[in-house]
Image 1 (cartoon, rainbow, N blue to C red):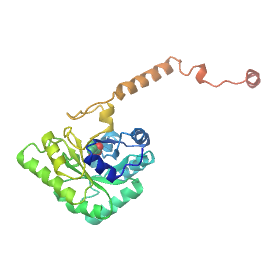
Image 2 (image 1 turned 45 degrees about the vertical axis):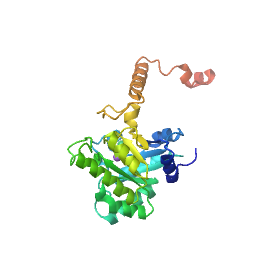
Image 3 (image 1 turned 30 degrees about the vertical axis):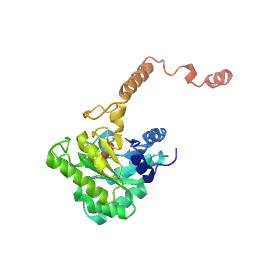
Image 4 (image 1 turned 60 degrees about the horizontal axis):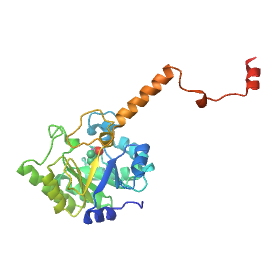
Length: 278
Ligand code: KIV
Ligand code: NA
């Protein structure tokens, strides 16, 4: 498949062709995303923090950790458009710091676009990066980087005020130059309405089926993540069962000395071995 561009994503919205985004955190998961022509976007999500690095929250992830993983994902990425999350703290301090960090993540992480969590309060940041020619994916609704301030990972936009705020945020972020927007954990009616109001593609997670695209976290969809399963997660695979059974079989075979067998072992010429062992 040809390289996916922003224009291609935009035309998918216009043709109402759903877009697929999937997270990747390293070279093999990036290769897996790239091996399927139906995957449009590979996201180096900061869910990297929990899924790969064992942190409790995305707020613990540093910019250098993100760059290290983004580079590996970039090495395995072919056709999908590749986006990385700007880690918490890398786009809050000042506009200069933000621009420096964004350029660093693009150059050293080798990604094409950056995702930033936040509403109208980050409009100037989105405008600045877009103005530098850095494609920005916005992210509204549930904002995991603010889970403490939001009193947990909870659905957003259920009441009138908060639904109106999300609509306004999305419009403001589009106007500020975002090329697309993630809608996380919001009612499906609200997500469908925002999708219809915006010209840029919306990518939902826990936002119903009427967004322009969907995204899932690798470990959630593969069934390798043993932690909490959100309402909106569907496990499309059960790799945990497969993986654990492979570990069990390997360990048993070693304990029983049935691994390796002769076909998996090297041998020496009989005469040569007699000379060595004489
Ligand atoms: O970090 C992540 O994986 C994300 C997606 C869930 C959108 O931000
Ligand atoms: Na994220």
